[in-house]
Length: 403
Image (cartoon, rainbow, N blue to C red; front, side, top):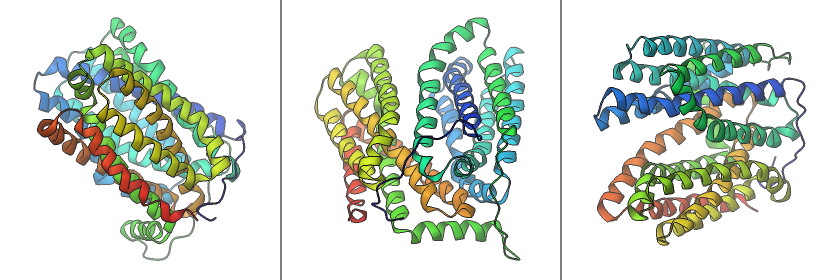
């Protein structure tokens, strides 16, 4: 498939397994969002040390750097369905045990750090297995639509349904959000285990094949595929910029714009709404322009949004810019994921997708540090401009892929 070929698209059938995978992904995302919203509140109740509170988030990134590539290699070796439901059962058991600890008033910062690390370690296998499994559940021409539906529904579940539910659940008890998260893991595991579609065939491994060698093989394929290599490079640069923006967004809104917590909530809501709209738009753009051109256009528009955010000192401008930025971000993500699935050999898809994810996670903390330093040195609006400066070469690197 040429990098600039117009995407072949269609609507995925809910039967044949996709509907159950979609439901499992949405249910699991809802539970994860409950935990993500409740954990910082619990951490703040356990300690007033900002570094310890921030470490809970940092420990959630660390396993991707340590085990991301390994998770992709394992996903290519095993039956992805079994790996996914087994991982979800383990995560459900961990969350149930943690909910019990909270209920017994036995939670500690050390326990929170261990939980964050363990859950993300399992996630490195689950996410790569899910990416590798999807092409076996829908026709190739429906991959773009399937990814858009998955990502859009997950955004709605995590961004609009879970957050308002957390205060209600906390009224019932501090442990309730974590117990609910455990239940969603178990339900998702049951849905995935019930998939009836044939498991993707595993290619026979050469004698003496090792995980290290298989990881290297996946990385070589990623490097040799011009379109995937260019897209991976661009995504890595953009994620550094995203790290700078997201890490300092609250300072941008509350300090530079002087908009307070209400202004910050409005910006976050605009981002969530834009992400949903982008999921609905991604298929139409890819049908008309192709995947690489859609990603390129998304990056150009996002760069303009970042410049506007860093230059126009008005809350309405930041709200509008973040909404459009999120629309284009979803267009980028849907087409990136689908292009990776279309251009990767089935036997290497887990390893190739894990390379994307590992680089993305590696870029975010670097960007966060750079954004914090820029804000401290030159002002709270400069991280947005720094992000724009990183998006420029990222988008420019895609021009060579467009004929």
